[in-house]
Image (cartoon, rainbow, N blue to C red):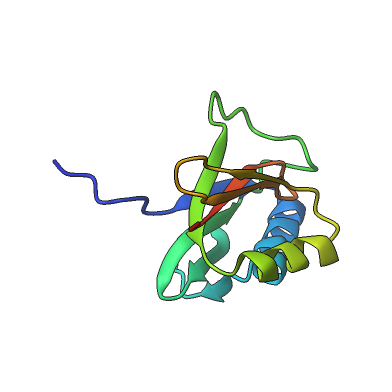
Length: 126
């Protein structure tokens, strides 16, 4: 077995939360909605280019903003380009973020949370 990379991230939440998360990832991060197979569940697939990166699943058993227990998961990290443009988008959406620099490479790491409280890291080459 060989792992080739991250296939996708799935977020399962109430319909109201999924709609907020969808808008955030499309409007602020610049992902696009795309094709999703006709599963029994409802939801969205969000794409970076031609790759489905985030799967959003509406769980009718969930209500409000109470999260499911996700264990020790801390964050998801994505490779990105266009640091200044992304910071402008985060600022325009009033999203609090932190920037760290990797000492050996100068890579910029931008950390923030989406509307569901999921931590996201964007990595920009130094």
